[in-house]
Amino acid sequence: MQFMLLIYSDENSWTQAEIDECLTQSLAICDELEEAGKYISAAPLKSVSTATSLRIRNNQCEITDGPFAETREQLGGYYIIDVEHLDEAIEIAKRLPPAKKGTVEIRPIEML
Image (cartoon, rainbow, N blue to C red; front, side, top):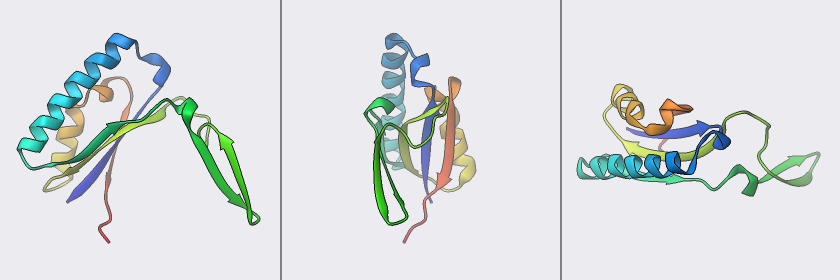
């Protein structure tokens, strides 16, 4: 079963040293998952300040800079994994460095 692990945190709460360490630890976890045949994809996202949001309202397209909603935590990256069940996805999510500063949302992927 495939799951997407969505990484949320306040991007302004990370120092450059913390970002570097997070990336190092995250890449090591990705390597382990790949060796076990459980890795599909993972990537950090650029800053929320680079986002563009699109909405269709009353048949009119509205495009704005920035995220859709003002929140304290922003979507900062993702992992896609292929594991047996939710409990295994939770165990992987617990190991991710951003879980210590933010939130890891675990969502099953609907296979079409």
